[in-house]
Length: 109
Image (cartoon, rainbow, N blue to C red; front, side, top):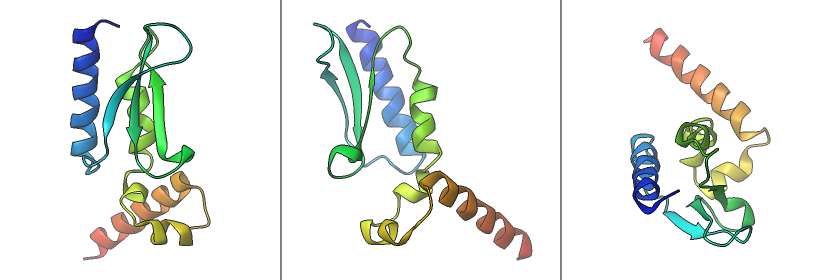
């Protein structure tokens, strides 16, 4: 992926995260260890090894597919670390239950 396309992809990811309310997450482009000159997009959403989403910027990369992970957890990711620690289900299952409960609440009012 050339520099102009990489910059455009970086901006698309930042914009989409901002629209989801996750705009405070750092989005960077880093070199991969797989091939010389190959780059990956990296979004840090928490501490440790599991607090990073990363994908190689190659011909198979899709912004929409990369952002799917964030869309499926956007409300979960807005919780504090303490609130997340209390949840005992998978984040995507929690997200679906959260959205279902909020839709019911809206319709009841």
